Amino acid sequence: MSQLGSLKIERPQPLSDIAADNIREAIINGDFRLGQALTENALSKLLGISKTPVREAISSLKREGILHGDSQKGARVFTLTAEQLHQLCVYRLTLETAAIEMAMKTDPSGLVKRLQSICEDMSSAREAEDFEGYLKLDRVFHDAFFEFSGNQFLREGYRGVSHKVATLRTYLSLAPLRVDKSFSEHVKIAELLKASRVQEAIEVLGEQIDRGSHAIDEIMGDPR
Image (cartoon, rainbow, N blue to C red; front, side):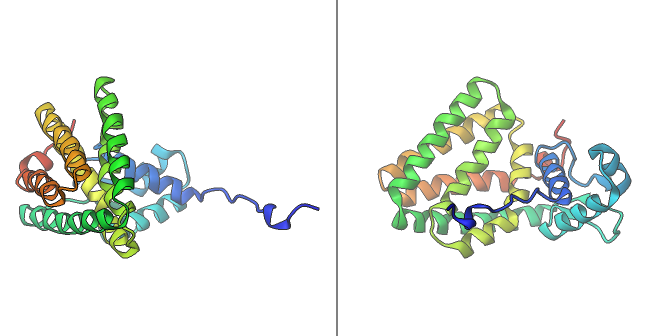
């Protein structure tokens, strides 16, 4: 007789979650610009679904902080002042530094293997001129610090700003020279961590993040 526990029914993803995922990715990819107004009606037509799940998606994305606004029927994509950008970068560096240090104590070989694999995939994406794929791998690279840190609260703290960080990365990666520099830094971080030169790796990370903290004009421009 089969185990009854194996007869679990897979629940379909709620339509509001699907809507939120699509809107979030459009923001991260720059399809919806920073500060752009998004209305319930327009999103409903664009996604081909009713207003109710769109309204729920908007509320969810407001809680994440990537949409702002008081109206229940619409919102605006988040924006940042120069000071807010600086504060976000300081916060991000603080969390990523802690995550790297913990990961190198918890599972250094696992982290290094993961980072090297991601760098190889990033190289392939660059050769294929897969810009969107490269940016997703960039996101995965930094997420790996938290994945291997072994600290769920650190992961939760980063998750609170990760979508904003991913969005800013899109704007900062439009210049080819920035991408070249960023990629070389990712490879360098992986190499330094493999050699257990943790503080040097953190210094490279700090230079990368600090460079973005001064790029408010690029970030608030049009990504298209």
